[in-house]
View: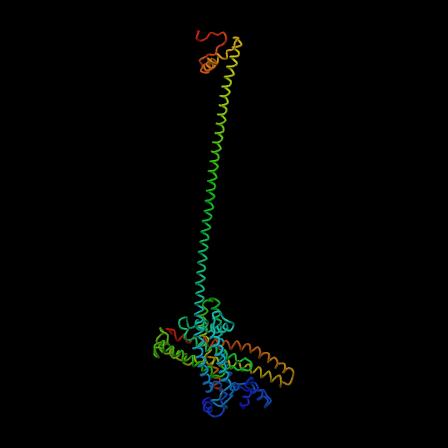
Length: 69
Length: 196
Length: 280
């Protein structure tokens, strides 16, 4: 079995954003369930938050590829 | 730096497949061309038409709503008219009924008065007739009484007094006096008032 | 390994390369990122015409043909095909464009949003369409191109709206912050607007498509290896199970493909909404 320690690092780096995105969408679903009419506004905010949070995981992926050589 | 060495090495034969994050120039170019073409097609041919459709549909829906409102207003007006007519008809009917009732009462009263008049007329006629008959009976009775008394007197006197009686109108005069009260009835044998 | 051999397998999936590689030394070689590079014409260099490029061009031709012919005979009462077109367009227009950018501003950006959405969706779905079976967006060049278009658009729009470059940079920092916080926020916002946003936008799509396709490859190629060269019945059975799981994952991929197209488009709309808004 061959591999690269960088991808192990990526796996670890994805834990935090994973939890973060889970929290964001949990809050979003809660919000929509409480106030369905606020869906449009909440969707915007939720996706902004998701983009910011996922940026970390994506940076991890980039660095995994860059530093594996 | 591995990345740098690979990028410089990419000039030679062989694409560095170990670096998936390195965009291949030919693919970049194709991507830009493809995106440009699709964007241009959408911008000139697809989106304006679809927007037109949306606008037309919105207008159609608005027009439809307007039409529906108009129809509703018309229906409302028709309903009101109908109801007004109905009310009017009801009023008319009740008025006619009232009229008929009043008319009936009038007719009844008229008939009643007519009947009463008729009845009184009939009664009067009957009275008149009775009076006439009584008069007639009186006249014939008077003639009869005169004749009978003259007969009686003739018998008493022994000769016919009829002509003389007729000539002198004695009986009639007597009867007239009797009626007018000039002749006082007297008992046989009682002294006469003139004599007293 | 030699890629010229693969040119002959244009309509097939990329599996034969790995099987061939596995056959050479008899042990299983897991599919890697190398499977995604697949030149057709021009050899093995920077300017080779690759199969994903061809797929992308085909997708543009398909989309152009489909939407233009549908748009050229639109009716107020839609036919079945127009219903589909309107469904896709209405989704992008109303759910993404109008709801995110706003009623007043969204119209000029509709071609961009619609291009981005349909292009990503069709090319992603190509990942599970038989005989194509390659998600074009798993080649990083194409997400980069799309992101470039979005990046340029939202910066240009923002600079126009916020009275020049200086006004744009001033608007990056929200008003009413404590004085000591302003430089930190400025650096953070510049990093977000100029580096993190494009990077994440491109790489999210790329990463999802690459990972999804790689996972399918692993299950299918691994299943094939176990079935044909596993040696005993148990391993052959697990190979069959691997195939079955690959089918399940294909449906999961369909969901991911749609979701990534949606996320890319809604983030584009968000960034554009940010650019057209008066205050930051």
